Image (cartoon, rainbow, N blue to C red; front, side, top):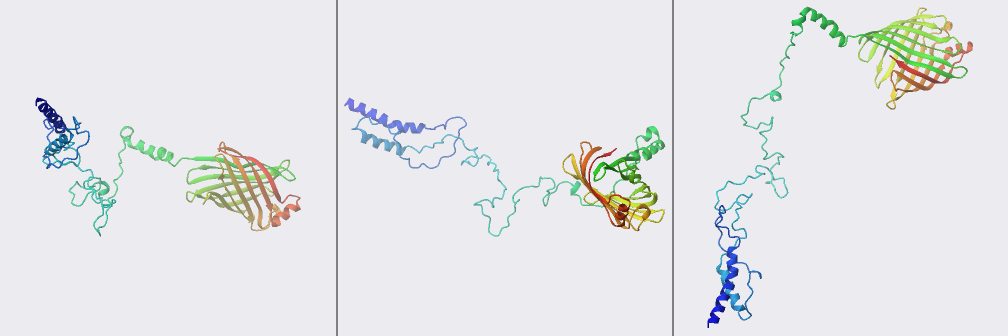
Length: 403
């Protein structure tokens, strides 16, 4: 009898073990600061796992022990796996019974109707900035905003005149107004656009290897003055080695700027060769044409009443940082025949050349190239009568220099 009582007590202890373990699982109700909200109504307990069922003491007692275990689990309340955990501070975890402040929503006020699955009501126009509060952005004052007064570009345009420049100069207090006025009128103004400049340029200074005999040619100019008015000197000519000059002339011109690109020139021209010499009154124009063509045109009226004309131009085509290709053309005209100087009417001669120069230093740029010359009409006939050439090709080598 005593043995049966002992076995019954041992079986009861074994059966009560899982229920006691479940009641202690996550039980932290009595820990400080771990107050839980009211629990929902108890639900039916899930089917216990094999781990939660105690191993039967013997095969004969298994049915009775399993029945007792099911009765104990039915009487025990359902356990919460997060019982005792305070999750009220987590975003979106508003626990019942707690009066804590609602969590801030980072998307509050944003219109998400354009997102997939967030369809707006039919017929509602979509505003790309709907729901965005931009009243705090500079210059984005919203309707009804009671901000400060408008400033800067927020003000409407007006026509108020600019303030007058100040006539007070600090230097006048030390050196006197009269002395400083002279300085400002003379030195300062001269150094900011009223200075005197000058340049000497030999655009052509070359050796010509041509059929029959070698020769030389030059074409240069020099000027001095300011931005508007200048004095120009020009000279050009050619000849053969061991022979006299074929042609040579000098011009002295006054130049006045018509605009930033064109200059009107007038003066005198004197022909040293051919004989007899002539003196011409000269008027012309020189400047920079569109697309960076250097252009020059002039008319000449001699002291004998003869009228001549000239047009020339060239273009500097940069190939690399150091190599520049220059095509060049020059044409001369005459309004009448001048037998004394061997000049026929119409187009008297034409020269076209192509020169490639190396600008390691722009002030001194050697070049090589080819040149073609031809005389026309009565001018060619006069040359043949004197035993001269009427033109042809020549290879050239020279230097373009300026300072």
